[in-house]
Image (cartoon, rainbow, N blue to C red; front, side, top):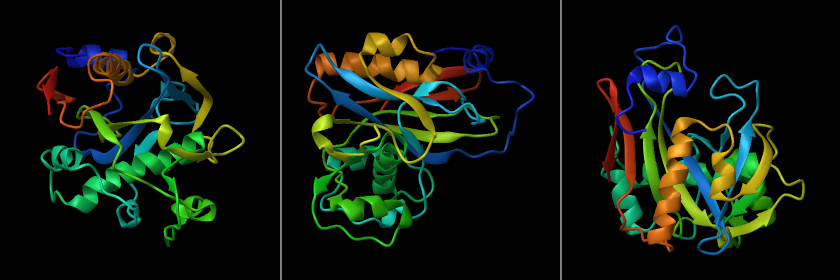
Amino acid sequence: MKNMSRVEINKATNHSATERNPYMRPKDSATLILIDGKPGNHRIVMGRRHMRHKFMPGLFVFPGGRVDRGDGLVPTPDALHPEVEKKILSQMKGRPTPRRARALALAAIRETYEEAGLFLGRKSAFETNQEDWQAFADRGIAPCLSNLRVVARAITPPGRTRRFDAWFFAAFTSEIADRLPEGRGPTDELEDLHWLSFDEARKLELPRITQTVIGELETRLRNDPQLDPTTKVPFYYLRGDKFQRDLL
């Protein structure tokens, strides 16, 4: 993905030049990559976006989505690891606050429940007045943040009708406290949920950034199997007509 031209990016993402909004600012969003299995035999959960979606219809992705206004208000029994919080705050535009950083992580957890039916956290008394989090309260599951790790960041190129400043978090399946028996989330945003090896995932129809992050994560797990929070992570963005890869 690094050094791809704008034309190559548009072709890779099926983006039409007629679908442009030069003034759209990227919105905070978060994705969660759940990792199962032992080193050398890892699997990750992915699902296919419903064809009715205007943004990346029919492509396989990780659970994730926009940060909701109430996400930062949800109580948690722990906090982001200090190195993870510092990494996020150092990159935030506007007002970089700890609440905004934790809202990213909580959005990733919420979206993983809504799209994949998986509850990340621990069994504990949990109360909130945020409607989207009532399923956690009903099951007595408090969302936990301390074991989430940032593995990548990417900003949708300018000109798109939908733009996201997306943070990719990762966690191991030991963080799953419960799951819906249906094997999917209460929304129908993701279909065909599967636990896949990295090789199996690469054979799917993927957004270019998802394909890139899969490769980055596979390499990182090989060299850093515990996902050390101090490890630098890739940041993808467009500068001029070329995609850049920095390290955060």
